[in-house]
Amino acid sequence: MEEKTILADPVAQKENNNVVVVDIKGLKKSFGSKKVLESITLTLAKGENLVVLGKSGTGKSVLIKCMMRLIQADEGEIQVLGKNISELKEKELNDMRKSIGFLFQSAALYDSMTVGENLEFPLRGEQKVSAEEKSKRVEEALQNVGLEDSINKMPSELSGGMRKRIGLARTMMLKPKIILYDEPTTGLDPITSKEISKLILDVQKKYNTSSIIITHDMECARITANRIIILKEGKVAMEGTYEELKKSEDEWIRSFFE
Amino acid sequence: MVDTVDKHTNGKSKEVPTVCEVINNREGYSFKSFFAEIGALASFTLRFFKEAIRPPYEFNEFLRQSYLIGVKSFGLVGITGFIMGLVLTIQSRPTLAVFGAESWLPAMVAISIVREIGPVITAVICAGKVGSSIGAELASMKVTEQIDAMEVSGINPFNYIVVTRVLACTFMIPLLTVFADAIALLGGFAGVNIKGDTSFSLYFLQVFNSLNFMDLFPSLIKSFFFGQAIGIIGCYKGYNCNEGTEGVGKAANSAVVMASLSIFIIDMVAVQITSFFM
Image 1 (spheres, rainbow over the protein chains, first blue to last red):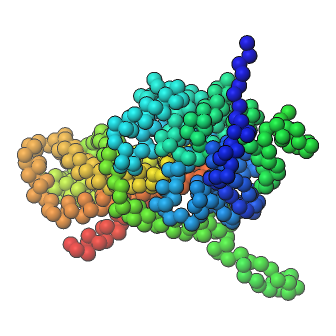
Image 2 (image 1 turned 180 degrees about the horizontal axis):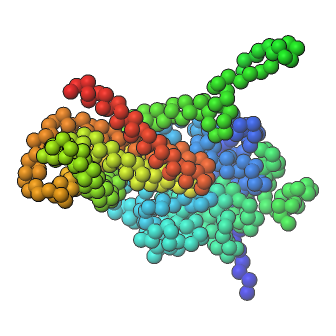
Image 3 (image 1 turned 135 degrees about the vertical axis):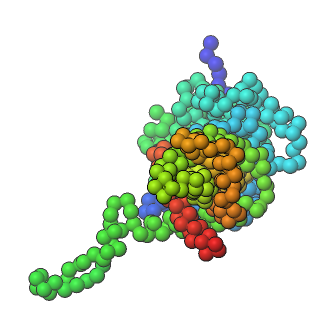
C-alpha cells in the first residue's frame, strides 16, 4: 500500500499571514563584477514555509547568508522580526541570530565534539539555562530527530542523513522563531530526503516556526512548501504555490517541475 | 608606467615598466598584496588583543588547547632537545681542545642552549607541529562552515577559536622551552662524558655557575613572543582561508613558513634589545 505523504497546507497559514517575520526590500549583492542578487523583494509570514528555487549560482544561499549577515548586502533592507539587520550592533546581532536557526548544506557539525556537545554548544552563552535543563533539551532535540542513541558519537561516525538530522536538532536548541535551510536534502538518497522533508514539516507544526528552504529537490519543495519563489538572474521570476507554478504558462518555470 | 620617447621609434611614446611593476607582474606575487597581507595580519592581531580581554572567557577550551599544544609536544621537544645538546657538545669539543679549554665545555653549551638554541629550536619545531595543525584545523573549519555555524548560534567564534589557541601557544611555548633547555643540558652531559669523565654534580655546577639572570630572562621573554607569533599566524592563515579544500593545504603550509620566518625576525630584534641592556 502506498504511503500517503502529508504536505504543507497552502491555506493553513491564513491566520498568520498578517504577521510578517522577514521583509526584504531591494536586496542587491555583487561579488566583484558579478551581480548575484539584483533587487530581491520578498516577505515571510509567521508559521510559513517559503521554498526558494532557482538554478545553481542564482544567489539562493547568498540570500539567506545576507539575512544572517554572514555576508554583507550591498544595498537594500532586510527586516527580521521587525529589526533592520544591517543596523544592528554586534551584541544585538548575536541576540537576533539566536532567534534564527540555520541548517547548513553540510550540517557543519563541530568535528572535535560529540553529538551531545554539538547540541549543547549553542547554549553555552545562556547563563539562565541550568546544566540540568541543557541535558533535558539535548535529549528532547535528539528524540525529535529520532537519534537518541547517538549522543556520544562523533560526527565522523554519522551518515549523511544522520548528520543532517543532528544539524537540525542543533538548530532547534535555541528554539528559533525562523529557520533557514540551505539545501537540506542535497546528497541524500530519496528515502532519507523524504524523511528530512517530513522532519522540516514536523518542526514547523510543532514549534510554529517560519522557514525559508533553499532546495533543488522538487519532492522536498512539494512536501514542505506553503509558497514557492523562483529566482532567475538575481531576481524573483515567479511566486506561487507548488500547484500554481507547476501549471505556469512559462516553459522555463514548468521545467523545474518536470 | 613611465612614458619615455624612444629615438628609434620616430618619437613615438613607448611604455617602460618600473621596477615595482616588473615585480608586481610576477605571477602570484605583488607588493600590493604583500602589504595588504601585513595590514590584515596587524588588524587580526589587534582584534586578538581586543577580544582577549572581553568576556566570555573560554577557560575550558584554553585548558584543552594548552594540553593539545603543550603536553602533546613534550615528547618531540624532549627528543630534539636531547639530540641538540648532545650534538652541540660533541661538535664543540675539538675546537675547545685545540685551546686546551675543554673544561669550558659545560659553560659554553649551557649559554648557547639557554640564550639561543633552546628557544629558537623549540619555537621552530612548534611552528611546524602546532602552527601547521592550527592552520589546517581552522581552515577546514572554515571550509566546512563550522565557523559560520558558531557565528549563527550567536557565539563569537573568534573568542572561542582564536583567542584560546593564541593564549595556549603564548603560555605553552615558554614552558616547552624550559623543558627543552633542561633536556638539552642532559644531552650535553651525555656528550661531555662520551670522551671525558665529568660527574653529574660537577657538570651541573659548572652549568649553573656560568648562567645568570640575564641569560634566562630574555630567552623566556622572547619565547613568549615566539609562541604568540606561532598562534596568531596559524590562526590568521586558517581563519582567512577561502579557497576550498585546496586552501586548507595552503593555509597549513603558509602558516609554517610565515611563523618560522617571524621567529627568526623576532629573535634578531630580541638579541639587539638584550645586547643593549647587557
